[in-house]
Amino acid sequence: MKNRALPGAITGLGSLLVAASLLTAAGAYHIIKRIPIADNGGWDYVTADSQARRLYVPHATEVVVLDLDSGKIVGKIAGLEDVHGVALAPEFGHGFISASDPGSVTMFDMKTLAVLGKERVGDDPNGIIYDPFTKRIFSADRGSKRLTAIDAKTGKTVGAVNDLGGRTEHLASDQAGHVFLNIQDVGKLHKIDAKEMKILETWQIAPPCGQPSSMDMDRAHNRVFIGCRGNLPSQPAMPTVLAVVDGSNGKVVATEAIGAGVDALEFEAKTGLIFVSTGGGDGILSIFHEDKPDKYSLVQNVKTLPGARTMALDHKTGNIYLPVADFGPTPEATPENPRPRARPLPGTFSVLMVGR
Image (cartoon, rainbow, N blue to C red; front, side, top):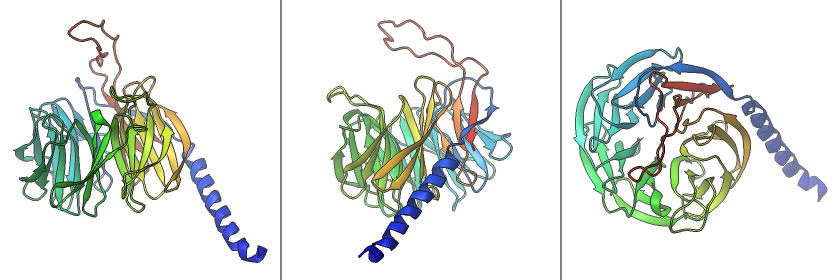
């Protein structure tokens, strides 16, 4: 009996050694440099094109494009208003920008950065992704509480899911016919048929996931990773956590503590690492390892900067890029603005590069 048990024990030890080596390697993550852009205004989600070696940085009225290897600005897509995110469909050579103007998606040429068209979508589009399975761009439209699907070749709307029951936030595709969409203000997660554009399942994930925000997936194991901001008015007090959801049944199978102000996360399949950016307090980039599909461990908390809440992962180098700025003092609260935010100081907008 002991001899029969030995191979399994060796296999288990091997898995632990592999995980330990990954944790040791990841433990050296630190800020490598700060890349200046020096414009003014706010920012939102950044997108890395690891193949074409470009980083798209939406910023106020434009998208600044950096070379991932040199950090130099290689171009801009200007003349926009209140930009949020960028999704890329490389097989068609098209990129797409979501903007609240009051709600549009702009299509551009990925080589020349020339604007090719603009499609009106729901009000206040925020999260935006490309799904290669359906060859569609999906825009989560917060103001209209709907999901809009756009043909990535033509740039034209081909469908929508309306009346989603709350404020939409981030979304992710399993690239097998489904889109997962957070409904932030009610703590729910929709599973949507990406072709037929209809809700298949709605799962209550609060508690433990209050205010579900950022999202990515381990597609091989059908696990949805969600950054949760915490309390909801209609729910008991909840901490800020990384929640792992089984994409087949909506069950929360694991949670891990994170900092405040989460707004982005990405999964690196080749290492099993999950990067979660939280911009509250001093700013923290939390790195977790997927030990098993339902078991996770903290690798490292990397101190970044206040407000470094969004991020992009370069899947070629493993480097992480986080937009940041220096901030002035927080204004005093007023009846019109009871929760004022500190404003970025002019000329300090930049991108932190974190790596090993």
